[in-house]
Length: 227
Image (cartoon, rainbow, N blue to C red; front, top):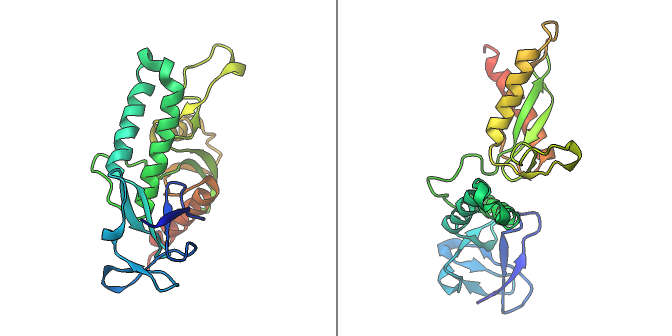
């Protein structure tokens, strides 16, 4: 079995496979289902001795890697979520939070590597939900972000003392975003020409989500202009 390396620039659960012949280089996808190292070695997926809970994949750069099997990560996700949502089990909440975030990272990595996710995988995986403020000209002004697994006061028990409020991993980002937008709309000043909407780009972090949200609005404007 070749050795492994972390995958720089890719989600943490993605692990690159290192050639055992040279001990340095990674394998690149080639023709006929073979993977080639620059030292001249080649392997096929059949040569990999992965654990039953792992699946091989190809990164966007064409390198051979592996991730946790999506069905395994999804099982961990639902198990952790069940603990988080059952008040009788909140004594185990801290460990469940860790498992919840780990499962989300594994599912997002599998999705990013092009693996097919199970049919009952939540659609929120990998998405950042922005309760967005939109300028009068249709461009992005700003917004309140949330995503599955991000720190969230709404998903945590409400503290009597605000200074002692805890933050739990978010379990309902879409709902929180729409609640925020609907609140803004209900209390908006009629003189304000801004509008509000929920934008949900797939993004690995908030800066990328903001850029992609702005791009979504740009495309929306272009589609609305008659040819």
